[in-house]
Image (tube, rainbow, N blue to C red; front, top):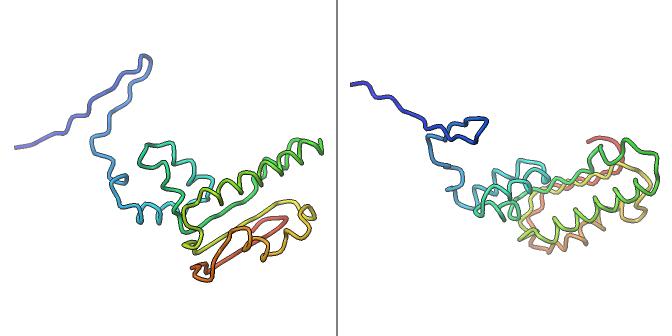
Length: 153
């Protein structure tokens, strides 16, 4: 006997989208595995997953890797120094939010930070500054740290 699987179509007025035939299995994974998977994404994209569902809201706050790079778009399309400065400060505010909302910075294994303009930060260019800012203890699992100012990785 041959069985065929039928897929329901949900109508939204103009377009029709098929309903998924399977359950969302990734959301049923334990927090540790979900955090491990999100650790492979740039932090910006891992944070974006928080809108998927209540289950995903805080998943990014337990990742094992933070990858914070200033987007190129913040450097292009303007010669206005005030606008560039505002974009720079907005990037640092976002970095501060990520660091303050992460549930356990001592569990980080990798930290990458890139600010694409040189000469802006002065003493903040020191890796020691970033270690202090993150508040890492002697029990930290940090294995890899990259701090770069200007250019690409």
